[in-house]
Length: 298
Length: 298
Image (cartoon, rainbow over all chains, first blue to last red):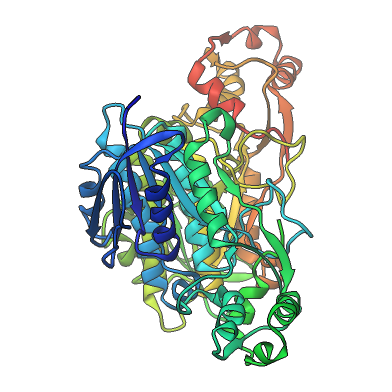
């Protein structure tokens, strides 16, 4: 075996992206061109390590936003940290205090724990941000220099996380990369509290024979990336050199922009009218408001 | 007397801008078209109330970043809050923890204290931000939609303050306006730890018969507003309606853009070569770095 074995920590390892990322790491056995020596999955609910790993895996359950918990995760001195843990947009909007505690204080506690290790410790830290950092009025397409003017508490918390990531990286406390994910579609599993959940629900549920609620009009446009693409963004972020990154470390990810109407037309082409008929229109003022404050394409 | 008497709180009331703002409020007796009924000046060092006020004045000294202190300031239910308190750029860069404690945690404790009053309490809150929220590479002139990508910890803390101000305002917890001040020049008094202090020092000190240190080259361009203009920005911000403000509540203030060489040429025209000769060139790598990361004109 050549070179050091990489120790990897995934925070938010029980979430949809976290689980898929862990599966990919176990399958590949390496990340950023280096062999993985150990993988720790952390979440506030018990994560499960994928079977078949050729390296040590460990699962840890704790509340990252509680004092002292982030410090414990530093005991293993991970070389690569994926920070995916967050309260989703709908929940952060509904519960102001919880959103700030998990999405802002949790991230800050992690960043502080890394900083306080000291002694030249400088892991790569991949932070999942969101296109919710952008707010209307939007240009037709969002460029790399569009301002962060979020219109939700979730977007505000992610934008603050980006600013901290950038400053801690500039100071040399860690080597951060922020990945602004577009809406992940089609999300597997059950509907969650993300306000953008319907983009997946209207495809996944009718195909499984279930009814799905469409809370917005068919004119709503948005851009999407598949779960597999999201995992690809994260592993690629882990492998970028500082020179490839450049001075601005928070990056908007690409995706496919389409309207809800175009999504439904695609479903009709693939699965027919019977499946499409399982989509029930039920306008929801709260979700319409969040959707209208969301960017349409990069 | 018509209408309610406005209760005004100035946080950072012992600082240069805070003192001048207090003098202006006492002189005018009103702000935003309404009579002032009471003025509280707060700072971590004892502020002094200007003489001659036709309303009640009070001075309070405490550490805003200490738990419970912001809540005490809400006891008087101020209708208008000016939040000017901050650690300056040079000090925030030299002392990472102090900068975040005062500039981020202090502001957040204030915002939380206002939010927790509840019961329909929604004061106007004028927050002093800074053009340090912008970072290189810059366009030739910075427009209203230029992104916040600060290159100092001070700029990061101010950008986070702006994001919180915007989200708390959107939520209706207060009615915020963020005022991005350019460098204030000529600052009166003694040199402080602001990295931008030399812009004032090279004018003020030679005129007073003292030597001044110029730590950057004459090619450095920057934009400036006088202390009187800064106070005008703040009282104007206090009087804007929500409709006049629009959806984005953090605003970049105008100023005069010139190079250090042009500043020195102006000093020569007004005061002659003997005065200019009191400027001593002494390059300072830390200040050159901050100056090169600062925007040049709006």
